Length: 315
Image (cartoon, rainbow, N blue to C red; front, side, top):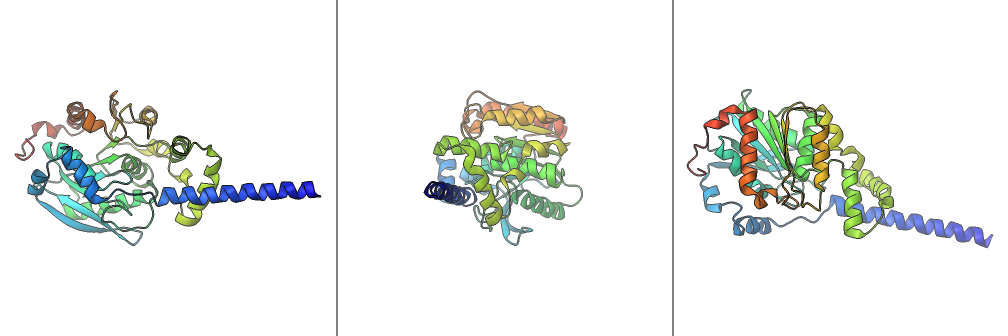
């Protein structure tokens, strides 16, 4: 009898340990520590990723876009052109829309206006949890819907997403609506569960046994499952052109995930995977090649961009 209770006690202890681990790691996921806005701005400007004085010269408007989940999404409408051509920029986890200004500049050179917005629980937007594309894809639709109302039916637009923003872009296009004229995704993950396995192993030296318990608490506390976030499945429903980008030195989200997405996609596609470039650093490591890749892709999917640059600020 004592032996039996010993096993029962050990089993209860193990379950308690796994449950505690599930609570801890679900906290790490939905309440991930964000960078401060001043920290992002300092990094981007001190490393000359964009010129703040030039950015401030651009005509822009702050807007609040209602999310379907009850909070507001803070956005900047940047409009150097009187045209119907726009890019929407979807940033990565822990970052803010400020991180996307350097990418925006590339598209302004080619005649696009822009909408930069903060994801839920990031920057100046509302929201209490981060869901890595699950709720964010619907927020992206809210941004698209707002822009459609603003510009009208003649709207021509693309979406650019980095890291979590790239995964969000693919989840939006593949599970909500494939409304953009084209997409650019830089260092997205292909499967959130697989991404968490990698981070659990690399950051905590732990096996994936904790993930089912973590997922249980994600469902209970935030209303989503890591199994719901699989861009590799979503991509099967996309029909518009996609440019995939990923630096091969990325040790946070492996470049093999983007290659997997590229190989699985059956529509019009291009890929840029330079040898150099860590996570979300492909542009800053390879600026000339990155710009050339963007421009070549645009000239294929939007031939009118060959007439640019015309904007004096970014000539």
